[in-house]
Image (cartoon, rainbow, N blue to C red; front, side, top):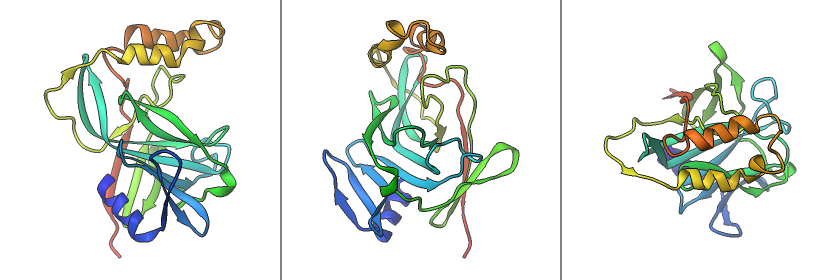
Length: 219
């Protein structure tokens, strides 16, 4: 999916380089996607009403990571993964860090962004949208550690066997969520966040996988 979407983005939209190593795709003066070529992560913007995907800006981001690191039993294996995220609060795009977790990257003004497709409700709690010739169906899986964002992507391809031991996951999250251990210790959700970091972070970077289906649409 990553290669197909990126190829079509280059075919359909002009690009410019932004500060850092990102590449912006434009449509009539508005941002429609952002690519991070080093990490091989693309953010595609979609139109979405809050009753379809909870958001504050009538926007959602479909994030595709070509080499997402799945951490299972302390071993890391890479595969392609995707997230569908509503834009809430200040607008940010996403990139990989560690590279086992998504992180907020650069802010954007919502007036400068437009969706290339519209998200609609599907059956059984799914969300449907179209990417060029592909019809995508997404279903978010709830997970108990909801206060750590984006633990549960959908995997585009199965995870390969093998992998190597990783020891940085807990340290990374402990630093990123330092507030929950100090000033925010009693804040709602901070206990669950600390629980995940202290007990699970060196073992997994997910709790339950979300689900994705896609197919070519005949013209």
